[in-house]
Length: 376
Image (tube, rainbow, N blue to C red; front, side):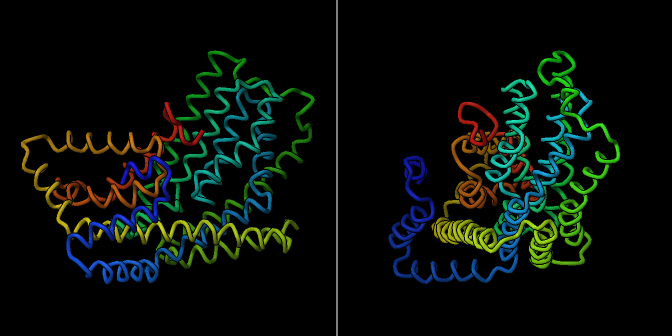
């Protein structure tokens, strides 16, 4: 399976093919009914209905240019601070990660917005690239992360609990990144020089107005949707629907919404959602065949039978996920690897919510690490 994925075969069709082959060898024609059942269960899972809505919300905020305005306003606000563009990137990455939950989109948009400004201001290219990619990878951790929405049903954990558990680690990582850039700029001011006097806005009223107008609308949209979930006022799907509608209204208010942009946003949402849903269904089918053949139980019984400290086993599991995170996106890891090792984690007595966040932080770090550095 891993060989097929590494050489470039589509993951979904690889999983379906292998599930059919080994399922038919293991228990005959029952494999066809099993596939129908698993695909039907995925398509009727209410929590997964939030995926296209959150994706659409992020795409429409991108189409409306809200993130570009937020970045410009934060840059203007901190123009007298050394390394201000680093802080602007990390600040915007928190808001945009919460809006999209997709790493690729976050890294791309942050790169488009910030790279030219950083180069023009004489910022160190390596530190600038590291800040952009590090901020972009927060998309899998800060709610409403698409990965957490998918991971919830897979691990049979309420998505609201995963969202609540992921907020503090995500913000802590952003603060640590900001602290690192602060120390580097303090030791070597040439890495992040102050914005030139000619590029600064002199009128403080203009600065405050732009900062308010750049920050409040997208923040209000994101945190109202997220807050309604965490406070129990709405399900993830209901909050995502309100967020999607709110993104359209914001685009209209900023006079950035056109029929062409709306059509493009809907097509992108359809493409991303279809990809994710097919992967989820194929992975569920493969996992059910794998489980029916008894392999996860055999692995769990073997490892639990060893007289080894449970934290050592956890470290080995995390190391394996870290290595897989170099070349692979989160989808095959969350949908294939995690269900296989889930019985082991339960047998070791670890809290599943804690483990899920640990996996998310692990993958976020793996995508920044050489030799592959997927987010770069």
